[in-house]
Amino acid sequence: MPSLKEIRNRITSVGSTMQITSAMKMVSAAKLKRAQDAITQMRPYAEKLQDILGNLSATLDISDNAYAEVRPEKNVLIIAITSNRGLCGAFNNNVIKRVNQLINVEYAGANPKVLCLGKKIKDTYRKSEYYYINDELAPVEDIFSALTFENTSIIAKDVMARFAEGEFDKVVVVYNKFINAATQEVKTEQILPIVSAVQEDNATTSDYIFEPSKIEIVEDLIPKSLKIQLFKALLDSNAAEHGARMTAMHKATDNAKELQKSLKLSYNKARQAAITNEILEIVGGAEALNS
Image (spheres, rainbow, N blue to C red):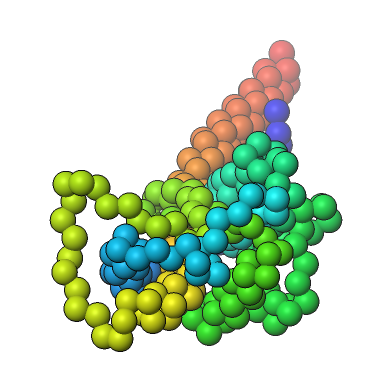
């Protein structure tokens, strides 16, 4: 049985850990509010942009567009988005598992490469044959240190250029979609080539008046839509990270409280046993003197 000093030291250690997890929970909660506001404000714009593009692509043949060309999948780029830090439960592992599945199963024969956005995914793949190295993206490799649309546009432009040049035949993005503070969903979305929207027979389409022409709008809208799609995925992942960390730290704090309570009970039992032994020794000594 541990000594009283060992139990007391452990109680102190658990108390210090509980203070850290509680502080991290509050910090994540504050950051989550800002990140949640950013993604909730972005979604309506991104979804409306996709609706307009879908309406246009349903009435136009955009197969001649450089970003809509469907080719045999000989080279696939996977844009994987994780966080820079841990202590957020299974947030990063879920993305890594999904990327491994894509590499080993779905795109096993398509020479897959992984563009890593986030330190955790980079640490996983940087020594593997699947790691995608691009010196031109080095200034924005740590995207979450300055998560802006301008930095996202640099990545999107480079990916679009390499797709148009034929270096990659398909581009997908894997990230955690923010549902709420306690729930994140791993999403796999194809961003290149552009998938034309097929209208259902019973679906109602919006009647737009276009100025300039539909073709000119599509040529300008597709690159912008791709940049917005990637930026939305990054904002989703950022909000989901803070939500996952807040939930993980909340559970860690609760577990620390339970452990501290259990240790205090053990400490009191051990102290009571020590006091009882001392009383027995005193009584035994007194009886020995009287006999």
